[in-house]
Length: 253
Image (cartoon, rainbow, N blue to C red; front, side, top):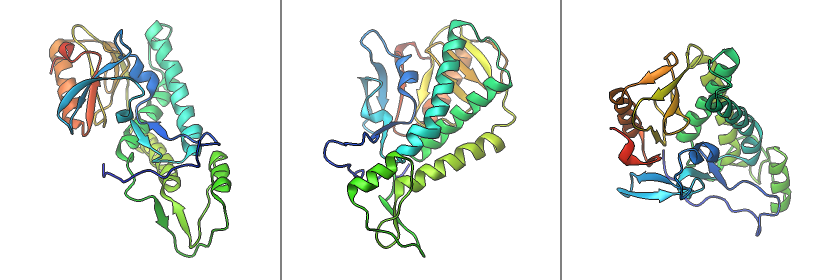
């Protein structure tokens, strides 16, 4: 994940309510790992330290890395469907993963996978050839972005977040249909210990709570502490900037 400079700022006061802090892993999902203080245990890999972090901590967020239309459109639809399913799995009203549940989980995992790898922009604008643009005020640009409409600036320059949003949509659904079509998700309960969550998912594991995850390929069932340690080691090894958990003391590695 290449680091970028400052994100492009909105007008003062952000009058059109454009999303600035964009969660790679949803706030609702992180919150299920929070302790009584409303925070999770976070290992900051880059700074080599462990600290407590709220689900809205900046470390979990990209900064205008994709456009508002993508955030409030297809991404929100995928997240809303997944969170509704997660609630049903955790309250026991869904105990088996059928075709519809598989679609929802595949789309969520693909979105998480792609956002984690495209959360930093190397530049704020992309130069296109054969395109003219310009004549829009900052306010007009923000109105269009709020409505999910792409625009070009003078000389054919596009905000990079717009193209990144388009690319994220394309990559997400390509991965769903070509990379995840054979997944067989199971609901997994840890016999002892807790799951750690990576910033960059590598294996098809989606932790739902400290003790419950979705995994593929796997049937429903429980896993031993040794199996849990294997999953956690893989999660930590894949992490680039951070990983988190409810309590690292309960996470076998």
